[in-house]
Length: 330
Ligand SMILES: Nc1ncnc2c1ncn2[C@@H]1O[C@H](COP(=O)(O)OP(=O)(O)OP(=O)(O)O)[C@@H](O)[C@H]1O
Ligand SMILES: [Mg+2]
Image (tube, rainbow, N blue to C red; front, side):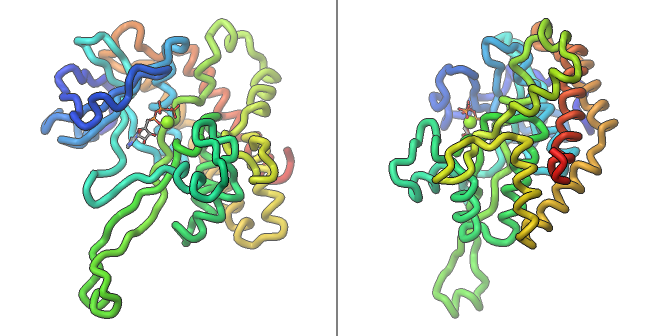
């Protein structure tokens, strides 16, 4: 079952725990709980969701969260599901984003906590020392296993959607407390162990050219697309010694360069290229068509065909340039 009709959340209850957690800001949002039965297979019953509106200056911004999720699906990258929704009582439209963990046995720990512990005078607010080198270092011990690939997968995803706001608190880890088998308990006397993994990549609305108004992007020729794509940057810096933000395309070129002398990075680059080479552009067209024709979306919350065309061209070109960079051509 895929979404074809916008969801009215007017009757959904506010989540008490978060009632005052997110006061009105640049992007107002609130936490709600789904009813036991919505008749929609893709909505988890009695589950927490974030209802996230657009910023004042960009009415269509919330669609970026929804399309970023769909691009995550097409790339095979884990992103919390996001759906088109509105509140008929408050007359608001927004993205309805599934909570990515259940409280109790699992917790979320943002990467900012690590940086704060590891870097002296870490700028917790702006994250000016948020950097790739430190991220790779602490994840090699915290997560281990596939950590290097996962970090690069995040950079790939942000490059494809052009996300400029993956700051230190917009990614992190899920901690699961798991009961040890009796045998392990007898040997170690530890009843439980904690397992660390990456949380899905959430907060993806600062992307997909959301801030460019239609009177601008409709004038863009291909060179304007290329200039915009090349200018895009991650929030992440190179290292503690080099606090320059890594460009989106520059990050893919960096992966290519690192792979020359590093077997593990060579495997990462191979996997990243494969993701882009297999990207289903026809699938993206279908997603965008579904967004522009979403039934029941009130006026003021609709996704325009013009913007759909813009997002398509932008994403297709980003993938082309990112792939060139992964082959050392950019
Ligand atoms: N789907 C989700 N599941 C669980 N927790 C979430 C989810 N979405 C957001 N959060 C939590 O809520 C916080 C705020 O949400 P989010 O990052 O999406 O918006 P924001 O803070 O307005 O963006 P910004 O990073 O620009 O300040 C997150 O840092 C995260 O801790
Ligand atoms: Mg955030």
